[in-house]
Image 1 (cartoon, one colour):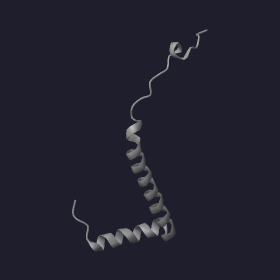
Image 2 (image 1 turned 60 degrees about the vertical axis):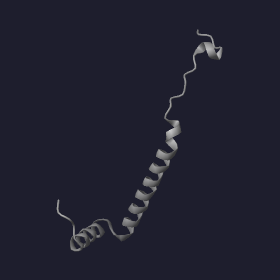
Image 3 (image 1 turned 90 degrees about the vertical axis):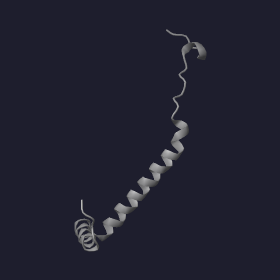
Image 4 (image 1 turned 135 degrees about the vertical axis):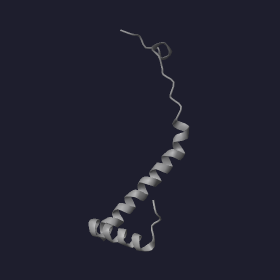
Length: 66
């Protein structure tokens, strides 16, 4: 795949603006940024949640089976 030069990037940007509109591009960028930050936060905080919780059986809880 050849490298993209400045002219190609300008043409791609112009096509995106025509397809989505200038205001919609800002909303799309904001949504992508929020999604990435949410993903990073979950990856960072999810490490301590990877171990499964131990299951409680009826004997340890004192419940009787019917």
